[in-house]
Length: 80
Image 1: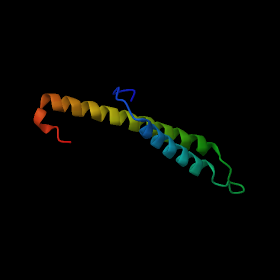
Image 2: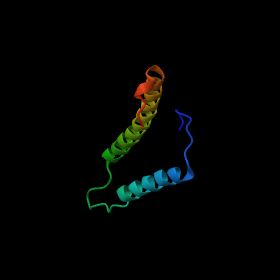
Image 3: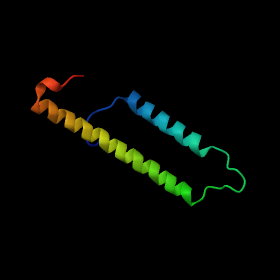
């Protein structure tokens, strides 16, 4: 959305938001076992998740641009 300037429908935003909230609730609502509180590895894990989501978003945008360039260079290869 930010990189490709494509528009998305409200239903797509709602779907992404619902899945995201569901994953967060599932992961955060688990009962903490006695003696096993969220230690320093919790922040590390959340950082890895954020990094993964950012890189996933960048990859999708880059793939879209590569496909567009390929279609410009070689018009016969655009098979959707």
